[in-house]
Length: 267
Image 1 (cartoon, rainbow, N blue to C red):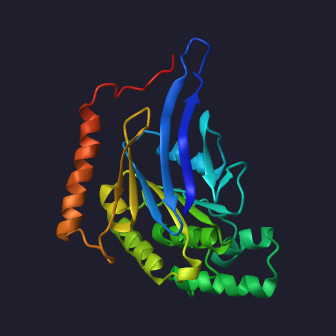
Image 2 (tube, helix red, strand yellow; image 1 turned 90 degrees about the horizontal axis):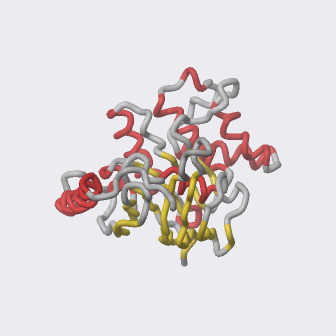
């Protein structure tokens, strides 16, 4: 069963002034994300990856086509779809515990149950003992763990991640990819989430995903949907990993030299 269905989605942005032509960002994008699947959306900067994610979240609406979650058209943002942003988006005046609690308080979860959920997610992301720290006292990787814990704590149907590790240095990014792999492996089968990750890193997509949607250069179209059948945990040294990386790299590189890679205009 598909949890998320993207059906012939198009997105057009108006020009900045009356003399500017509209910009076609996405053109007829279609793909499905299965229940409890980890899907990555991969492509060059400007191909519409983040635009697509914001429409799945409900922050923007498609110009054409439709997006369904659990068979229902996406409307306004709801608790069923949580978002992890690149810049963490933590409240600086709140402790780690209070940041994780925020969504639960908005949902009016009882205090006793709230404490159980917070404790579980602190363990899940490896932040036991940091409950009373403030964001400025944490490393970038730790801040992103808090952001992931906060997003998971409200028990969404779909977890959306917009290049969550892009702001980290190479060492912390590798560590967070490993941590996310661990979280996926340790998650209870009944609590496992459908996840959609926007990334420009081929390695990150292969390490984490069951399914990779490769978008063309603008306007974004589905160039290929790639299934990742490699066993977990994964390593960049595995022959299957190397072969898949080469295939996806070729798909991406084709876009660099394809005709029409300039921003597309509507007519």
